[in-house]
Image (cartoon, rainbow, N blue to C red; front, side, top):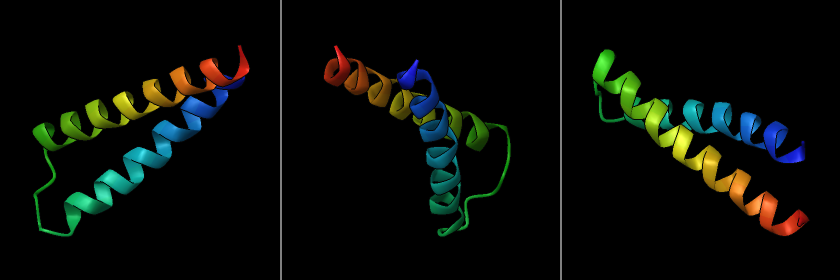
Length: 57
C-alpha cells in the first residue's frame, strides 16, 4: 500500500519537474511533449515503487 501512495506522489512530482525542465530550453507544449513527460514520469514512478517493495519486503 505504501508503494502505491509514494509512487503516485512521485509521478506527479516527476511530471512537474520534467515539465519545468522542458520549459527551460523552450520546447513547445504539445502532444509529443505530453507523452514524453508521461512516459518518463511513469518510469520514475515504477522504479520508486519497485525500490519501496524491495525495502519493505
